[in-house]
Length: 301
Image (cartoon, rainbow, N blue to C red):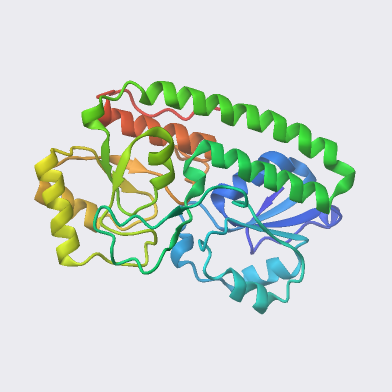
């Protein structure tokens, strides 16, 4: 059962495990394992930006009533500790990204404004990491609700097989991209894990978080790179203001290729309503410019 923080829990559902997901992508993963055996509340919903999210009193109430809170970790939800303290929640905080190899801040393409060795939190952009997320989620649900352990594990096996098959499919499709076309510019630095996994060079005017702005020097440097290297693949993101990408398009004389889903899913009637749909949509969008595929993105079940 899926809820928003403002939705009251029906009386007949009060004996089910109450789970809070911090944002829509892990919310969908949790839903695939818990299905109707949990009551799931997702704090940052469709097209929401968890980087700059401000928790509400309804969020605090949702945590106060929760049995389990599941977050991405890797410094993604900078507000989660404050929200937990405000809510009085004393249950476990499950970090879905536990066990993955985190990337550090990328300073190769003008992101020296990132201080220290910031972790890249966008680990879900690699399907092998998503499989680790799902394993951690399954373990957490089973620990909190032992009577349904076998049910959760059966769903994990089914979902894991779907993720593995999608990973194989995407590797095969991206293998068609010529080596000299494997550079993409997006709104912020959210696709480092995707790039590492699938051999695509992602660049962006903004670093790991959307709450920063590039300097004029950094923006000019990226425009020069696009011109000098002939980079033609430029994309908006669903969670970001299009202003910077539109400026890059004008000054580098590049056509914007479409919209990628980076840090959240779409609404249920959009092209990226589930994590699997999000991945398929993004790959199709990328291939439309990288490999000159011109068929529209199709969200498959």
